[in-house]
Length: 274
Length: 257
Image (cartoon, rainbow over all chains, first blue to last red):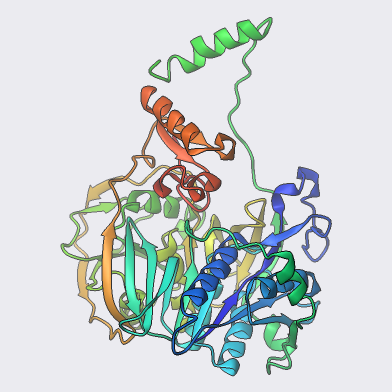
């Protein structure tokens, strides 16, 4: 069973101060000075795939894991990490740097689905949302392009020995769904309480992974030219800061004791059933 | 411009979702020549409908058999678009709406955008605003090709009222169940009763600072004693210190207590 897990790394936005949220003439925000992390939903997908592979080691077709990202060199360190924790292949698709893929899930899905078709994977895992564009569409579009069924908001997946397929647990409105499914399939990871974080490799695993290569593919090598990457029918015209107009009351008083008394008597007591 | 609002009558968040759609259509409603409500249901046709702020031209009630299969909805939407084409389809803010908006736009060769907070017509093209960079910024896009398939952003808003419909123009559609060659068995486990968080007047929200399940349990007790509902941030629910249905924020409930 060939499994591809698609992920992206993002800047840790929580470490940016208010003044850092400025952009250049191409509407790019400079986040190069903050650490990068796995997008949290992708991280869950990566860990779920590792657990699935571990349970199918003795099966007739053991899992062969590929981690795939569409990014530049900044994700190589993460790909090494994934090699160390057990991914058999790590692949990075590198596009022309002048092309903005942040808000272009149509193109990203084209790159991913072309790679999946080429390599003959049967299962594709992706995270539900995240990244600069927060598009939430790549998984659905990969499913459409491949013509495969898709399950969203997946929280767990295990092998179903009796059917030879997978048992997939997912969330729908006000219920949990447990489906036994056949491959091929696209799974989109949601809030996975059982697999929220990716495992940490040991020093031995890190050293072993050190010399394993990262496969780098260009879009042209996948048969997709630069012009195809640009046109997605959605044009970014501006970025703006969200309006942050919140009602505010200043509680006045001579000292903290008086302010606390007034806060309690005038604002908390009438509202709470104290 | 012809538009359709697509919702599920069985959604537990129907009122909230309709309220969010009312918010994003605020600036564009006057440009519609025709607006319809396309409402999916499973067992019985609904008797109450969410109040939409623009004047509805008609309601289409669509019965679906396999509610868990997105294909059930997509096929009937494709049929409807062939018979009654519209320029704009607006879906709910949840995963259901996101999936339908994206996949339908792809099949119809239109444009889609999710989490839309506002939209407007500019020179005959649709301009949309959505949050980006983890809600730190907002981006303004022009969508080039109709039909435009949008899903509303989760945002604090006044939930729509549910009222009986006086429109004579209510049509009922049924969909043929799609062939599901990939699914073998299915089990649906309903959630425990809703936490009441969505409609609570008072909410006590707990973050990562709580540090343990014990502290969260204490805070649950305090919330109960002051008549508030307990809400929690993502780290709190991911550590299983409280139930997932208490999640507040972009990935969970957006509330306006």
